[in-house]
Image 1 (cartoon, each protein chain N blue to C red):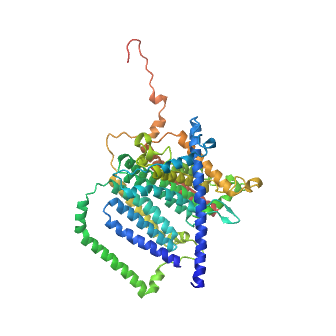
Image 2 (image 1 turned 90 degrees about the horizontal axis):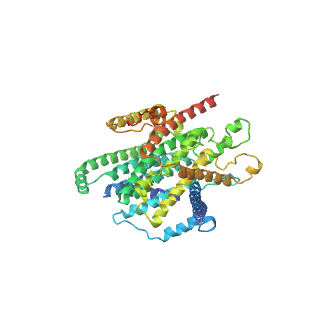
Image 3 (image 1 turned 30 degrees about the vertical axis):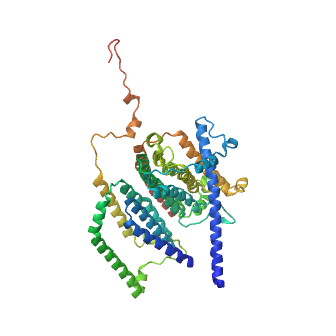
Length: 202
Length: 355
């Protein structure tokens, strides 16, 4: 147990420190790299909670895909640091407000658990004995919450189609490769035999 | 100290010592294997082009990789003046560490002592996918931190390419997992002792492995892993005719060595993953006496070397893809194909189980 505690403090300290570094870092690319470090430590905390499936998913989805695209965009930006500083002062009250609301909600949630532990713990489904974490998650997602799960999938599908519809533009005059047309090309369609009279040319 | 603390320390200490020892054993073995695989890559490439390949250092050039190692280590590491020093030096470390970390969950044999693996994770397949998706960070960070145009282009290309092929790779893995019903890599291998061959009444053999029922997916997996590891014909990240050396232009000496090492270890990992998912891991080709008396690690190594040979042949024979063709293949061919296969495999399994 002592080892678990050591790792808990290690991961949570690093997560908090890198979270702070995300907003303090002057270079936006460094900020994204610190964000990735924060994701990693959150995954470490998940593993300490025996939620190894969630930990791996966090790394595959957030670190492997979302943060890469994030980094991709941030690297391409031409950022004016002076303007960013000015924006920081201007947006600070809004940021503080949002942060304060989140903090209040977290305190309310934890307070509810401390004051009335029974209803809070009865909401969660306990992991059945002798079943791996992944299997337990699948069993509950595909039975009890199947409609919510499918609903979430539909929302994501609509979002994806929406993003494509918003950004897809067909430019005029762009030459595109049609592999089917290339493969279907044969002597009949590509070669023309011309009988040329001597001395006249084409 | 009380006796309780001492037993606790003894238990943790023993566990720690065993894990560290095993990790060192796997790391040293892996690095030695990679050194000779690198030589094999060059020899195969040379043989296809009717050259001799490296043949000067040691008998048949066997020590060429070690000579290269010494050469890289003793050269001066040049850091460009405009580079972001920290990120520039971190990038090769990220590549090499991620590539090596993947080997923590690769099971190499199973016998009376148990499974030969450092950590027998329940979510081994997911861990491998997670680690292989991290390889892209080394490339992106290296390309950006070099503060130079060609490396940056290479980094952007690699980011798009590796993410695209990861998607189809994930779906291919899902088809295998549907058949096995477990995310544990050792279970994936033991599930291949029974299959089409045993169904026909034959002894457990190569016909039971997943390559046969999932042949189209095996092909998709092979091509996707070529693209995922930036190997030719998909090496647009470092296409020398377009980008000089891609994201590695500004790298020299040991940082460059780490990039190369990470790349080759990642290729070996992909070969091992293909072996485990499709070629029955450490299982012998036919489960009869002289073959099943051979230790499983030999069969595992033989299959990995075979997969690596295929990688080397692809490099030697196939011309480089154009970038739009690469994207078309990933998104318009492999993704729909693997997506349909997931549905088909799930349907067939459901019918077989209810029958």
